Image (cartoon, rainbow, N blue to C red; front, side):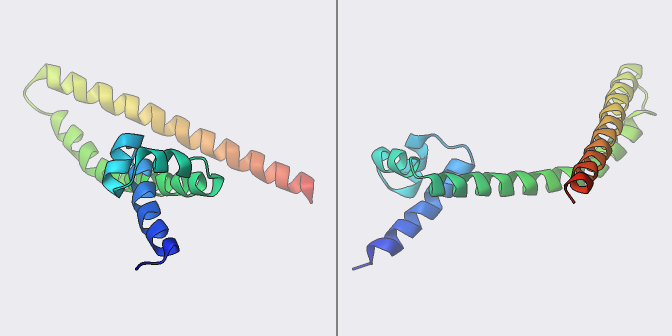
Length: 126
């Protein structure tokens, strides 16, 4: 017979994965082969909740990395559309690229400001 701790870790792993991906309690219970009562009980445990949040953050970081890598190909595709035969398509590509560029510039500016503020706070604490 499997020790209780081993079985708990096995279904916890499956529950964490399911819940981190956004599954409902019912779907997570089905995927982990446990009852919805077990899912609710586990979600009352702060350590379990922290593990779900950590896994969700890891998944989001991975997805962000993949999206960033694919964005180069997407921009290249849009560049090609800027010189296609359809003026409507050219306009849509131009709109998207200018919106994207504006957001990217703003994101960089915000990140730089946050870094300066963090450095300022850290200098004040020393």
